[in-house]
Image 1 (cartoon, rainbow, N blue to C red):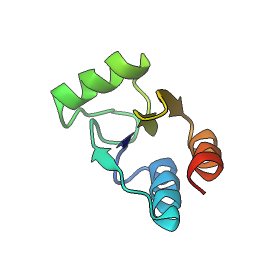
Image 2 (tube, one colour):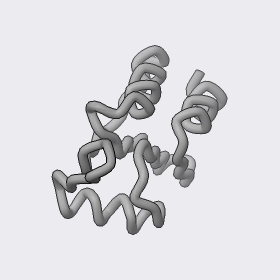
Image 3 (tube, rainbow, N blue to C red):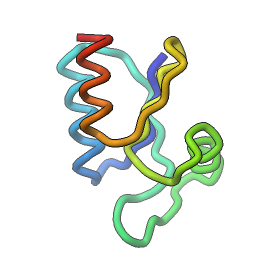
Image 4 (tube, rainbow, N blue to C red):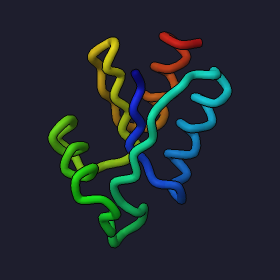
Length: 86
């Protein structure tokens, strides 16, 4: 299962969502915080889960539970998706 920790207004998150859609891959979306400098947290539980899983408070963050991989940085995530799901 793919889980994407992201924010709706974040252009980097949008790049990852677009790639997932292009590939026709199902995924679960988590919105832990708003993008931007204030980093307003929308969901405390999801925010803490993201930090516990990856160790960073950064989006986008992709977790691939089937492959036991997790990645930050939209370019790396897109490359990963193309390699394993393209």
